[in-house]
Image (cartoon, rainbow, N blue to C red; front, side):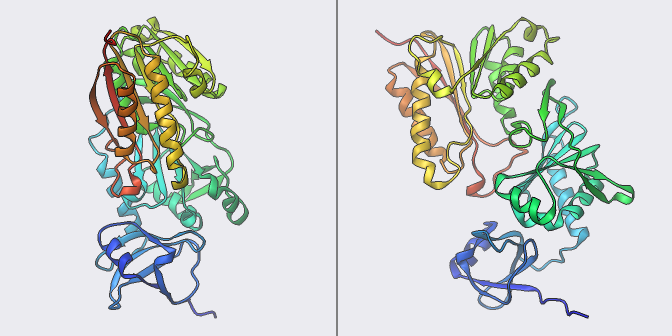
Length: 417
C-alpha cells in the first residue's frame, strides 16, 4: 500500500506575503522560496508565512509563471465538496436581482473575482458555457461538472478551453474545446463529444443567437450589455457604424432605439452572417423592422481610413483585445489612436457621437482614455465627454489585472470655421 503524499507546502518571499495579505489572487513562481516536494497540476497547495503560520491555499500549476491561484487567504478552512458547492452558491447569489426574465444571458462566475481562478461560467437560456483559462481545473473537470449540475442545473453545459490549454487538455485528459458536459443519474456528470452549437437567449428583451461551441469568448460578448443599452438611448434617428461588429449586438440595440440605418463592419464573413441573423430575429419589433442594415466585410482599420468614405452620426469602436501581453501595450495604444483619428473623420459634420471601447487588460483605463481624448482634440472639432464606463455588475474586477473593460462616450459638434 502506497502512503499518501504529504500536503504540498510552500513558503514565499516577504513581498509576496504582503501581496497575498492585501488580497491579490496570484502567487508567481519567482516568489516561491521553499517547496516540500514537486507539485501536481491542480492539487491544493498550502502557503505558509515566515513564521510557519497558515497564509493561504490555492491550486498549483507547475509549469505556469502563476504558480498558485488562490482560493482562500486568512484563517484555515477545509476545502471539501461542501466548500466548493457553497462557493458556487455564493457566486450565484451575487447575481440575484440583477436580471429579470427579459435577460437570460449573463455571467454566473467571473474567475478570480468570484473566487474561481482561471474559470468563467456563463448562462445562455437553458444552457451553460464553462470556459477554462488555466489547467488547474482539468483534473477536476468531472467533479466540477457535478457541482454545476447540483447548484446551477441546465439542459446542457459546453466546455470551452483557452488556446493555451487545448493541446494539454486533449493529450493528457482527452478533452477538447466545444465538447459537452452532460448530466447523469445521481447528480454526477459525463463528458461527451456532442456539443450544443447555436443557442438563442434574451438580452433586455432582444433575441440573440450565440455559437456556444465555436464562437469568440463563450459565444457572445456579454460584458458589453450595459454599453449596448446606452447606445440604444443614443441611436434615435441616427445612422450608425458598428466597427468590429462581431455578431451585431450594438446594431440590434441601435435599431430598437430608432436608428435609421446600421452598418456592421467586420473582417469575418461568419460574424457578419451572425449580425444579419440577430437583426432578423428581432424584425417584429417595429423600429428594428424599419431600420436598414448593411454589412461590410473589410479590415476595419483600412476601411475607416479610406478617403471619401461614407459618414455616420454614431460610431461604435469595439475592437478585440489589441494587447494580449505586456510587450504589445505600446503598439495597442498606437492602434487605439489610429482608430480614433479615423473614426472622427467618419463622423457627420453636425452633432454626432463616438463610442470607443477597449478590452485590453494591458492598457490601463487612464492610458486608453488619454489616448482617445488626445486624438479627439487633434481633430479640431468641439466635443464634450458624455461619460465613462467599466465593468458590468456580473463581471466584477476585484484586482488590477482583472480590470480590462473600459469605454468612453464623446459627443461632437460642428467644426468651427
